Structure formats: C-alpha cells, structure tokens
Image (cartoon, rainbow, N blue to C red; front, side, top):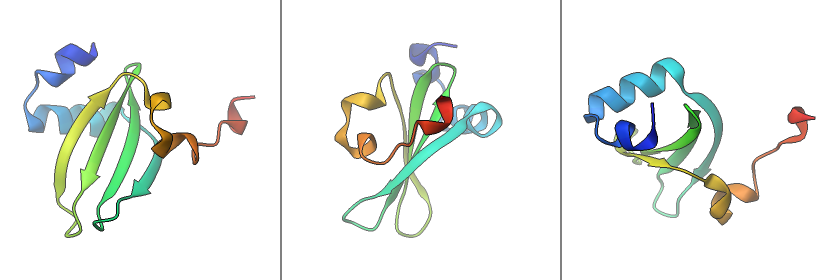
Length: 81
C-alpha cells in the first residue's frame, strides 16, 4: 500500500490498518495537552493525534518524519546497529 492509497481510505479504514500493521516509534506532547504518536506503516509514517480527552483528533500520513524537528530530538536509533 502506498501513502496515496492510505490517504484515500476512510478514518475507520486507516485506523484498522494502523492497529493491525503499524509499528509504534515515538510520541510527543503538544502545548494544548494533546499527544501525538508516530507509527511506521508500509514504508511511510502515520501521526495519530489524541486530544486531551483521549479521542483521536486526526490521522495523518507523512513520507518523512526526519524533516520535522519534533521527532529528531527524541527518536533513538541505537537499536538499529
């Protein structure tokens, strides 16, 4: 599955695939009390934003998390060695 195909799915379709095949990588908190988790899925990345009340605000597929300073500071790649 490509990122384009993933983005055309319904919210439930995206969530189902992420739950079944996604590999958790990292999480961060926002200033508004939300939590954003990042997963590896089929060679691209998916951000899941949980609001302060623990409901999913959005699922967003991105090609490259390494373009964002939010994740560069916290992802530990030592285990890949």
